[in-house]
Length: 249
Image (cartoon, rainbow, N blue to C red):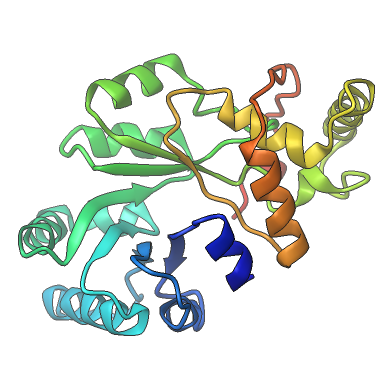
């Protein structure tokens, strides 16, 4: 995996403080000039928020072996909204003190973004986008974000691997029928499901980056190879509104 990352000059990593030892693993990767986005989540117990926040930043910088984070986000916007004055002050201080380059939010639905934009313009918004889940292809959202110069990071383009399966194991009959239509479209157009998923996101020019996950080095190679190919059009007709499928929580 390290050799594949180096060969493709991949240096952007997306992680979180509560993803087990992922920060330490990424910190030990011999990649020059790593750009790392990490996410924080408030524990349920009551605490001194300022002290907790500063400890989180300190731990992440130490574990990741970097002097500065490319991005810092909240895993759960309710954490942020419930303590917005404190967290905004702390995050802007981190930026001013050059511990963080970009501050932002990771969201699951468009209402979260609308609530945040009422009082703050984040540098980055990370959100789910894939062939089934097209909620964020809302022109008002995309145009407003671009006008405000927000970086848009799409995640879940494979829907946690569900879009790469031979058959859909979750969801109702209608959703499974749409999945079969998607597979049929891939077959007649001689495109792999993985390729169609990537290019579906790539064809949206307002998206700055795609956050991808992979199981092994072969899959990483396949993703990087497909990503470099010329973008082709994937139709929007495979949209699914079944919450059980599109909300990865």
